[in-house]
Length: 395
Ligand SMILES: Cc1cc2nc3c(=O)[nH]c(=O)nc-3n(C[C@H](O)[C@H](O)[C@H](O)COP(=O)(O)O)c2cc1C
Image (cartoon, rainbow, N blue to C red; front, top):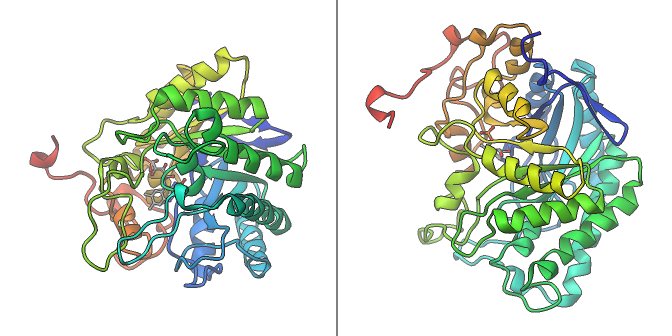
């Protein structure tokens, strides 16, 4: 087979991913306003599961009671049945991919432009954050997910504690050791809940891409500390911080996607392919040099199976994260395995999907026929919208 490494299985804590392709978490806007699973959401994941990815991380599920319209929720027991039905629906289509859920605690924002900061939490509120993760993890287990990913990246709460922009004083802010305290407490408490035999991954930022944010100097250390704790994989993302976001228009909440940092999370067409592989590589090397072999996930504008295979061959990562490429063409893995690379409908990095999320709309792909909520099946380049941006826009 042409892409040997890409299609080599990987076992983490007894759970075997049939290949190295991970569909990273992607908010869909397909939940109900209250955060329940819908048929459209099930169909989205069923379509993706049929395409051959080895693992799928279901979109960030909110773990706190605060309002967050159309985001998937796992913030109380009433959400478990829907999530279980989602798992059943995915397995019915394809039992092969391992399916996890990302659990996410967010900082509140308001239309007035106000946003909550880590400095705003009273000491007595921090154990509540830990407890909310623990409870969410218990619900994820009840719903039947194969693994859990704790969200410690982007603009969210745990990432904000980890970031150099955390200006709390001792014991939960300031030095890295202190900034790690809450994420470590969360990890340990969730591990205790799920037990020693259940896979628990984390997602961190390799770089915050803000002046006051973390760089590789911090993220390599964070990754090694998490590896020492026994996390089962580390997914390396980037950016999406609030600190350099544009000033919101009146009556609009601040948008972490609006600044340079925001533009780094899902690199658009003007960024080079494999934009963030150097972040995963540095973290991979630093963690390995510390004696840990925890798998590292790289993500960010990986467009072709050849690029993915090379990243694995060059030991830059152990798992290839694909988000927009699999939204666009969920059959990317199957087509790669069958040597039908030419049939892959490529993500152009236009970020229609990302902008839909910022507009609080349902997330769709500009290359699909208008009005559909999942990629057609089968889907071939001849059926897709324009494949490349205009030539004079290429640089
Ligand atoms: C619409 C959209 C929603 C996303 N939602 C999440 C999310 O819920 N959690 C997360 O960790 N990353 C999220 N991401 C980031 C992706 O997982 C991924 O890291 C990023 O898009 C870069 O990978 P790609 O080039 O393969 O798309 C989202 C990205 C997009 C475009």
